[in-house]
Image (cartoon, rainbow, N blue to C red; front, side):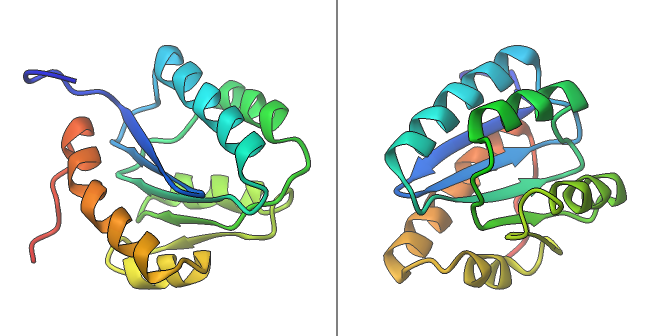
Length: 145
């Protein structure tokens, strides 16, 4: 992504963890297609995969979630979703029926989210390094330090 253009969703694989950042909008179908390709590769490569999601309120549409379910099938993966959005929290609640390892956290509890995922220290450090760039791609302001 170059210039001032902003996408609705950005992601990067950090070892066995997919890190996904959403702004307040639905991902476009093109963004979701790219994500599903990466997710399929990730599911194939990592039996102990994890996902960390940070969202300012954006989430996949019902149709997009259905397509994701087709990729992951019945597999369960620890997933931490950082959000204050009530609709996203409700969506996570619905997803919890299929994946008991999914949980929401307030955005200021990144430590709790990373602990939920059971990440090694090296994995945590790498995730902390890439998060600011993913946030910038979607136009989400980083938290003050």
